[in-house]
Every structure is written in C-alpha cells, then in structure tokens.
Amino acid sequence: MEVKNNDSLLLKTDAGWIYKNEVFNGQVVEVENDGSVVYRLPIINGKEQGLAIGFYNTGEKLVERKFINGEKQGVFKQWWPNGNLRYLFNYNHDKYDGQQIVYFHFGKVQEEKNYSNGIEEGAQRIWDSTGNLISNYTVKNKKIYGALSAKDCMPVAR
Image 1 (cartoon, one colour):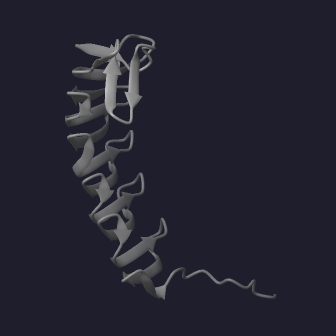
Image 2 (tube, rainbow, N blue to C red):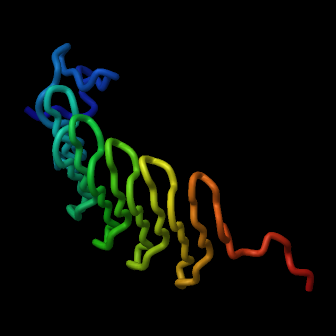
C-alpha cells in the first residue's frame, strides 16, 4: 500500500507510523503536483525498514538512505542535481558513525569528518572551493587538537 506523506490519516508517533488508527505497513510517498513520486519510504510494522529513495522533480536521483527497525543504518547518499555526490554519511543505530563526507557541487571534497557513536572522534578537515585546507583538527575523548580555522581572526590594517 502507498500512502501520501500529507494524508491526514497518516501519523508518525513515538511508537511508529500509524494509518487509519492501525500500525502502518507499506510505503510513505511524496508526490509532486504532476503525480510523479519523488520519495519512497518503506514502512514495516510501523517502522522505517529498507531503502528509502528520493528523486528531484526532474528525475535525477536525490537521496538513498537505509533503515533497519526505524533507525538510519549504513550509508546515506545524497546527490546534487548534476549527478555529483553531495553527502556520503555513515550511520549506526541512527547516529553518525565513521567517516562523513560533504562534497562541493563540482565534485571536490568540502568536509571530511569522523564520528564514533554520534560523537566527533578522529580527524576532521574542511577545504574551501579552491582546494585550500581551511580547518584541520583532531578530536580525541571530546578534546580538540589542531587548527579549527585557517582564517585570520583579526583584520589586517592597510
């Protein structure tokens, strides 16, 4: 069964998805004005379960996200409209875990961050659009070591 995400009989509660006062099994879909489906979220026993997939209204893939028993799990990918990756995040039990990468629209890496159980841990780096490293630090036991920003904090007098 497919149910549109704006159906007033569809509810997301703390206990899970409910449709017509029953635990929902099926797909929650987001539909454009022209009737095209741009997002599919699979639900089993009221919980997100499986691969959720979204598309731009022009047809290009927008997002892929896996759920297990209502939690984000594994790789989350999002693309720019031009087809280049925008995000490549890793989840474990609904929390960031592992390397998280953000890309510029032209394909170069903008950020590389590392997490453990939802908390920054390890090397963290950010680049500007020309490829210059502007932030380079490490987090260990919630303490930060390194350069948070390569920008000057005081204006230069001329």
